[in-house]
Length: 403
Image (tube, rainbow, N blue to C red; front, side, top):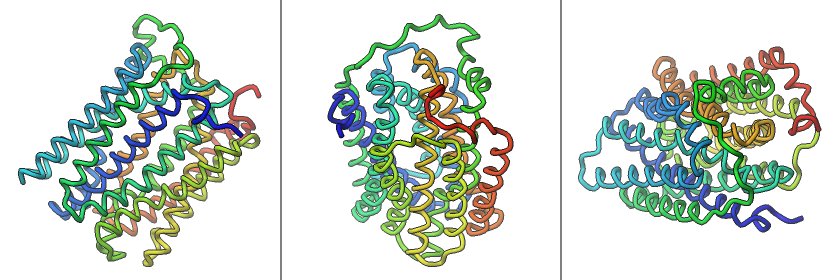
């Protein structure tokens, strides 16, 4: 069977850029989290890093969608990566100069969040232009596989390189961002984008209106929002690594890599065996099992059991991610993909960055273990509620509407 990587050079460059970017971000986040916890010894501040990255996406949602729909998506994406390269260089300078502190890390997180606010919808809207529609589910699975591979390698490499100091990690991330920019600039579109509508109040809010009208799209992205927001434990991994499992920065890197290892295996499988039937039921089942695996992680005092539980959260989450991304992209016309993807990015960002803030806050109130237990149980309750609220999503058979 041929592969989108072999058949479509534009998608190959897109894939390489996304892998390099994800690896750089994952390495950076390991170091930023460890430095912040070393500086403040406070779970609340770990959550603040996530909140600082989320707020720009929320504030700029109408602007980022318009940018993705009105301008050359390749240039917008390259500019976003250049911004992240600059942040990496500033963190490197702060580490060298010895003036890195809590406030600067939070400001750097805001800058990263701003760049990512434009990057995510642009990246999501660019992908469908690089392959024919019938190849999109396989291309998304392959893209997810590359991303998960980077998430595996990135944190582990970040933890390992941290032995040489944070400056080594920041230097490597800067190189990776530069390589990603070059790959984006080499992309040549396989298909021309659709004509753009003039800017108006209606077009500004078109993405929100589209998602609200398409209940299956709304159900899919809001399910991911609340399930991951409650069930995610990533922000608390420094606490589990140091205080519960008693491993150092290297162990933290391995723990952060575990969900991606499970996700990588599943995404590689889905790239060769796309989901053709009972897409809705499969997605809800996967999210429920994600919640169960989160509960196992919370209760574990063994490094290896914790590692396995985190790998399972990544595996089950990847099933949901591929179904959700395929459904949203295939149900959305190209001229609206940027605006719809911007709103979708808010949901994703809320589930990840805002989820990190929620985890840090509940851990500060109740302790890390109780916080993760509450999150896992909450995920199961969300699955049950969403199955009642969105019956058409449960009954959805095919990823593409009308098949």
